[in-house]
Length: 214
Image 1 (cartoon, one colour):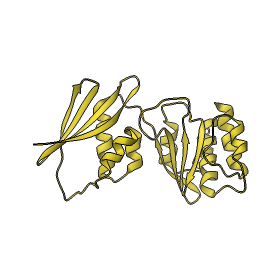
Image 2 (image 1 turned 30 degrees about the vertical axis):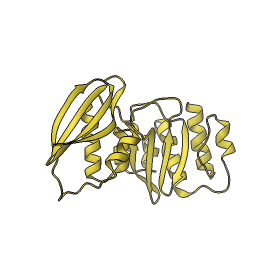
Image 3 (image 1 turned 90 degrees about the vertical axis):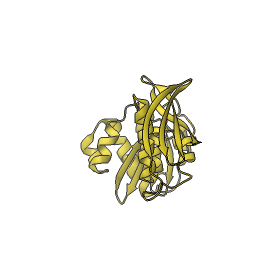
Image 4 (image 1 turned 90 degrees about the horizontal axis):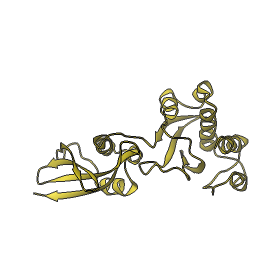
């Protein structure tokens, strides 16, 4: 793991273009070509500093809040660099299963630094996953939603944009159901149900969303 992580950082620092890589250290060399875009270089430098446990070096490549989030990551480091889409760079897991659709670490690069880091989260209560997704929806932040919910659940919820002047939602708590928990928000005319799966040990995530009408 450490060997591969250092290799990722070294390739990025060397100026290689990285795209989605198959597993294995040799894949980093196979995916190298031309000069790396600035976001990949910056993200790779931060990732490498994190793997060395070097907060001072990390601070040279990221804002304080981003460093704090990354160094608090509850799982072992992702083992594959999945490339950058514009200024958003991903590092994903291929051998560890984590809750949520993010599957690792997402770095948002602004200028010469990582401005924000999103990570898979370990939540020990069903309500934390449900409230986290609802808050992300209110903020129109899909990536924050993927920290605590499956891709399917995020896609369902974000089909509609939360309107602060629209329907009011009232949190009704979580209750046990056959395969996990159902966390509900009521609103005039019906309710939204977030179906939460997982365990305290493995972590909880919102797996799907449903609606019921009065």
